[in-house]
Length: 196
Length: 399
Image (cartoon, rainbow over all chains, first blue to last red; front, side, top):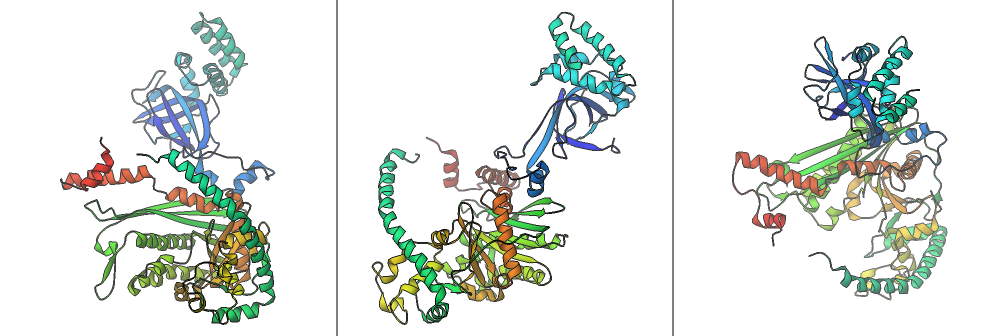
């Protein structure tokens, strides 16, 4: 895992999700992408459902600085301290884990370790974890502070890119969703529209 | 019990009435002061002669060239660094059984131009043990470092940290080292400390740090300055007092002893240099450079403190510099334009100093945590009373 490019580290953690502080400003993985981290000898996988850039100190409000700048880059060039005062972080919902050679699509026995490094999951890992779509339940039932259906749709779009035929994956996922949401056609319709 | 605001409101009304009454008088005084500045410029030689002979109770600004000169800011180098430093402290608590103090130093390195970058460094240090808590003379006399003396010790450390950062900066760029407050150790003047204290804090403390900047400045464009926001100094106004004075030679004790109003020089009483230069200078301009004639300044040698005023968008700041910076126009211009740029980026106050302050500040909660932590750790090893009952009573605030 260390050979890959780490994007941040875990600064808040529980069995069901973890918060990652990014090393670079505005460098959070896209909504719905899969990331991985560590808890003891387990590799934990999560789906990014929320990211934000804010002041490191809660009491310090960010103010506009670019009135006389022609480009946004100029704002950072004229204020190099901003990189030290602002930070980007993201939350990921845990959807499974790998232990030894097995992949499980339910919550891991331990939360991700605090300060554990966080990486983007590669295509092979995305494929391994999405071979079976059992984890969709975790996402559908996740009580997220953002639009859960948007997160599910974004995740499926991202995950489909790991496959040679993204369309086949999305059809398979659509069928799984249709089964899981057989009693909630409006929600199913809403997610499917977002996937397209 | 909190402050009784209702009872103080009527007193604020009285204050406002008094301020209004003064305002008319104030405009006249300011007009007079402005005219005097113009006339002084034509007679600089006379003023210098008068200044040398004068025996005043006021602290007069020393003159270095034209008095009423103003200068626009020059261009900044394409690539340069500004380094700011600030500190805060936890003073010795006489209610605590253990004598100690904490200094928290912060240094901010900001590099502008082709490779912009920032470094934030903070360094908290706990001082304990007799050798660290006292200043000692060779004959055995000693004085505890606490209160105002700790404030001066902190100033020395702020300058040391600033110089240390310049030392480790690998970029071969023009550098401005900026401190908050005065370069003059006024505390040493006001408290009349023994020579061994002055030597320790100034000769062995502050000035060797100034020397480091001086040495770097020989080959590179490295300058040292300090920034005083909303200055209340009257060194230049006092020059005008001298110009008005009808007595020759000027001798306050002889001609005006015991008088505190209705003296001829009271025509400019109540004005400050900041008010004067706010009227004289245009935005972004600096005033002429003056020399501080404080008695302690004689001990600064080649680092004798000079100063100028700088008009910003919303205030006039006093910038203090060692004489070797004032004597080199390229350094002086760099200090002027770099501070102006810092204030523009920092919405009126140098961004390197405001960030250094943010990093250094020890909040009330931090202090409480520190003392609690200390008590906890010490209780483990040495059970017993660690702080006075008065201190405990303040903490508990029982009814």
